[in-house]
Image 1 (cartoon, rainbow, N blue to C red):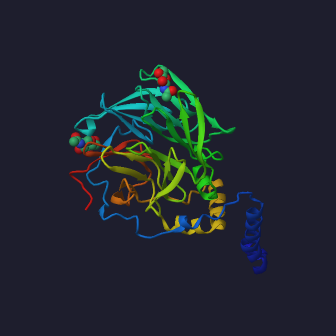
Image 2: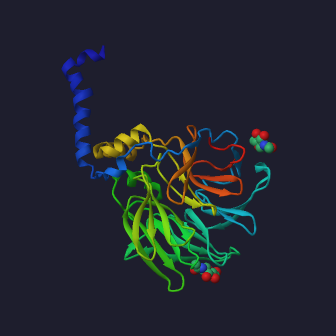
Image 3: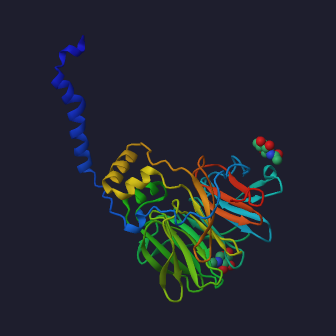
Length: 369
Ligand SMILES: *[C@@H]1O[C@H](CO)[C@@H](O)[C@H](O)[C@H]1NC(C)=O
Ligand SMILES: *[C@@H]1O[C@H](CO)[C@@H](O)[C@H](O)[C@H]1NC(C)=O
């Protein structure tokens, strides 16, 4: 037998010691250098679990634009026309006419940005403002004929992952750049590195100036304007936290922390509540690796070699009131990658970073208990 050529010692050496030494060498050579996260990122209490829960979000949910909407990340509703605008993975901003029956919805390819449209909102004159992950902040005229780049850098630092946008009543655009270091396809690395590469920014169309409101944010994601226009509420995905930014005072205050998942977009519903999308709940692996940088390094190395380990699970949408108090959670163990939750009438419309569809849930028929 061929095996008899090998002594047991050589066998152990070749199947255990060599790979072990090689791994150590690889680990040491790899320059990926994750940081310790702040203590508040490592809280796991039940404080942000609301009294009302619907844990079977998919039961009763309807699907809109199945196969036609590739990963519709964010949603904006245009009241006058009744159309939903959403940015898709194929670079198109699409418009959806939703009808009583979700199956009868009509999807229209509207404008192709050529990048990856994420955050979407309406400007004061009906124009569509898009936070495009690759291009920066875009202004698409309401007839769809003209797309203009408003800004793609601030203080000499280019945006690498323009993520979400909100529009003030004064016309100023408030938006986030999730990371100046990693792009849209490298989101996992930004989170695994655990360093604050994100910024909260504003763009004033009258002066055409871009301002950095806050820097050193841990994956700056969703942003929403408060109904009284005094502050913004924005999410930091990596540390599961949302904060308020008071615009005149230029002051930051905690809004809600220790969220039951990793927050993405946050949307105000015009009726006293914000809806925070959670693409993933807190998994055991995320929990442990957030605590130990060396584990995040191993996971990042595995990811580089093509092994996906950090599977999201249990996505949902958290409804909170204006004080940041959790009210209701709609989630489902079998669903992932919910990136936005927009309440329109009695329905909650959800975007996704994975599925080719918008999900709609009738909140009156399927309430949280
Ligand atoms: C909508 O389409 C799905 C899939 O084709 C089908 O299962 C469902 O019954 C339809 N719903 C209605 C209300 O027609
Ligand atoms: C967007 O462009 C339109 C012209 O197409 C202009 O009227 C509007 O003021 C612009 N909006 C912003 C926020 O720059």
